[in-house]
Amino acid sequence: MSAMLLAIILGAAMLHATWNIIVKSGGNKFFETGLIAIGSCLTGLCFLPFLPVPDMAAWPLLCFSCLCHTVYNMSMASAYEKADLSITYTIMRGVAPLLTSVAILIGGTVLSPMAWGGVCVLCVGILCLGWEAMRRSGAWRGMRSALLTAIVIAIYTITDGYGARLSGHGASYACWLFVLKMLPIQAVLFWRRGSKYIRYARSRPVPGLLGGVANFFSYGIAIWAMTKAPIAMVAALRETSVIFGMLLAVFFLHEKFTLLRAFAVMLVAGGAAFLKLA
Image (cartoon, one colour):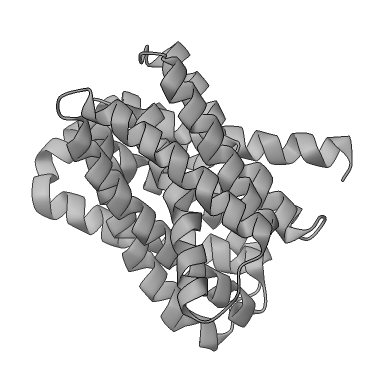
């Protein structure tokens, strides 16, 4: 892998952590996810005219993924309402590959020694974060929402993997996903708090747009990079987003930095990388 490609992939990981920081920094995390969904939708619309329409076989998975992403956005916002990003974001990104590996194991696939090593390292990291969360009042509730988010991530990751293959064009599938998933997310927010959501959107249009652009390109760059380098290597490098998330949370959100938390984040990133490379 070239140094340039490595830098681009790490940049995508930084973008992923950045839009999560924007959600966490907002006064209303649920509304913030809605604004970011609008921003990523507008970005996707800019590319759709130049891309083919996905194959019809992919549309059922595309629609199901939109529903999964709606649950993902709501549970992620709930987690950020209750606990620090450096804990919840790490749980979300770390548990998802762990669940995927367990599903593969139940399906009868034998895991390699590297994969088992990744599972063990991930579990230790998550236990450390659990201990850190239990030391703080209310943080455990945030971990429960983060675990739900991780489950949904595992589901939509598998769904999108198959959907992108059936679509015949991964980039087109991704763009349509960003465009369509905006609709159920907005429907939920308008149904729950329509007038308040509109007032909030008027007060923070720029962060929402920037977060949406970051959301779109963090995913788009990953898809492009997987055509230039081994998929497992790209996926493993993306797990560095949890390290970026912790650093950004400390510097911009002024979250507490502890050696235990830093150690746990490093373990989760390393364990996830082992699982992806196995």
